[in-house]
Length: 145
Image 1 (cartoon, rainbow, N blue to C red):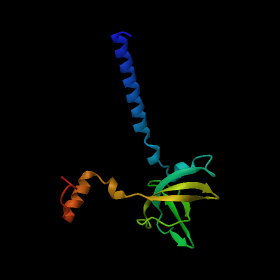
Image 2 (image 1 turned 90 degrees about the vertical axis):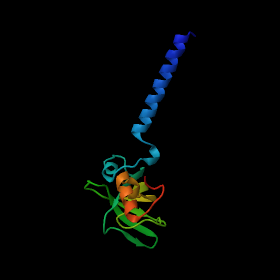
Image 3 (image 1 turned 30 degrees about the horizontal axis):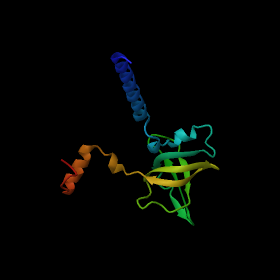
Image 4 (image 1 turned 45 degrees about the vertical axis):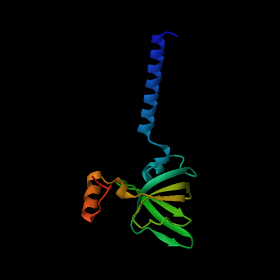
């Protein structure tokens, strides 16, 4: 193979690699992806389908008792909420009005969660807000510049 052909093949391989990486970045990792309640309810084959749904717990809907935790979640700006049933121990940082991602499946008019992940909103603060908070609290060190 001539030198020119080697360069063309190498350039084509680099372009394919960059485009593939771009697609992965733009689509996001499947491990971090979840649907909003309205997106999930808009799917035609929701019954029995497994999914990850993210939203905020609707105030006043949290009920606990006899091994069952029930609540509704709704994403910001959406009108419809999804009822969620969970039959296990709650995460330590779970509370009414938490932002959560629930994993499970839709059965009999409710989402049966197998797992609840509580989102930490302070992790999503802009850097300036975080730095201001740390300075106000007198926290020093590597937490801010």
